[in-house]
Image 1 (cartoon, rainbow, N blue to C red):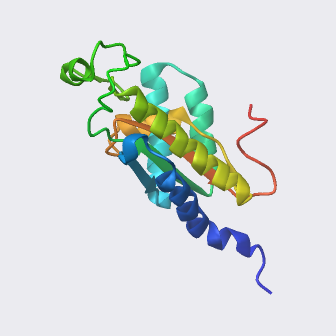
Image 2 (cartoon, rainbow, N blue to C red):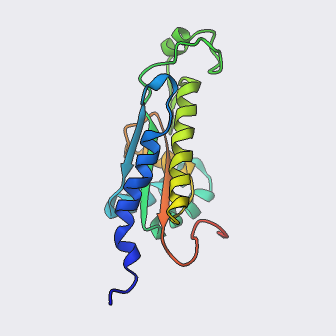
Image 3 (cartoon, rainbow, N blue to C red):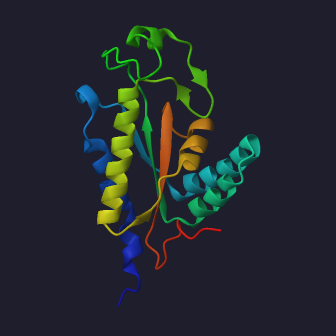
Length: 179
């Protein structure tokens, strides 16, 4: 008998979760979503970077989240690498036109912006689809700004904005009831 074999399939489940992000609807049919599945070594590096990022930002919750990333069985990143704007001139980005927003000097912090609001919505839909697929597969998860921000800041993903989704198949959900 093979005991606890469920952990052996997590990489396949993570890839299935990323399929949900990839196939989520995109504004004007333009796919600017970037996805990644971290290796165990990269996951440890991300947790280390989250601890460094906590010192830079002064946010204690980043340390708690870094501990969650260390304890997770896997971690996927879902990001946005914007190729332009929707050209709707809707003003949601705070500019009068898409052209004006695209010509504006981008702010470089943990994320790069401003970007087209439609692109941000695409990212949100992709993240939501991935989290929903994880739930459908009974894989515990939590969307983490902190993991995506550290991955972006330390150039672990080539994306303008990213979020992390740690995954776990333990008997207790690691990502809730946290200290």
